[in-house]
Image 1 (cartoon, rainbow, N blue to C red):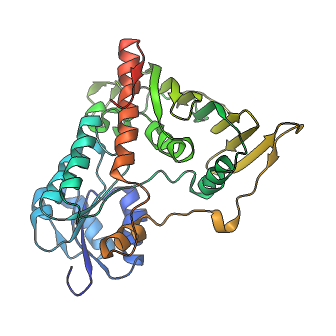
Image 2 (image 1 turned 90 degrees about the horizontal axis):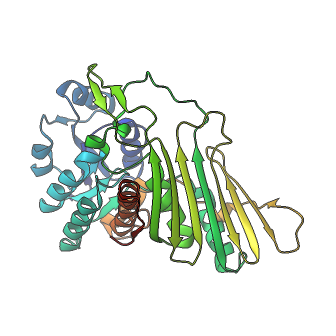
Length: 347
């Protein structure tokens, strides 16, 4: 850092980077966005003009190796997350990496090992924000014994649209770009880990409803990333979990999570809007449980990253250790679906 200013280079300037990370970094104070490298020179210059970023690089490695940055914000698709992270750490740069940590568990573990070799550097994965508002409330209720022993978990994440067989191949459907990441599965698993801890065994079935799609230039491509997944898990907390993720369940009710215990039940409805309900033994029905204002979390990822660089805060959302956990889970789902056998965690 120069005179306390954190100088940041941007590798990959997608929607989330433009909407959240660049404004969030600047709002943290004492931060300069000094360089950018996007997929093409044209798109890099467009982003540079929009945000008044002084330097455009044609090659991401040149940006990472340049002496004009202290930290790298990675907003690429997952296939670039590990290479850019490893290069940034090797060049003594702090790293803020977009969610969907890596292509697979091996890449995630390599990122974690590289970060541990550079303990003076901050390495952070952009967290799952879906449940920030209620995370602390759910954690408190579980810690206070509201549920008793946690027995069963039912998580369903569904879009209400019917399958669109004519839409072009999206990067999230392209295994060459997204790896073992499936829909929002890893993101929701990360949220679930905050409440009850990780899974210890996974068994999964998956389905691809449209096995061939056209890519952005019109070529037919095989689709290997599922759009409907059912997962059964043994959880470290002792519960059995059933998780369903789907983008083909037209007119479904949406997303909800049920936590069933020996003494109580919690139900989370949403997003986009979140509502938490609960009931205990002897109650006739569930009642809404408001999250106290002082317990409601919010988006402060970039602020946390900058504060961690300055040594005034530690990274909580999300550590690379937690990222490895959810990448191992996503890979275990694919391995189980391919083999028809249960897969134990950690891998």
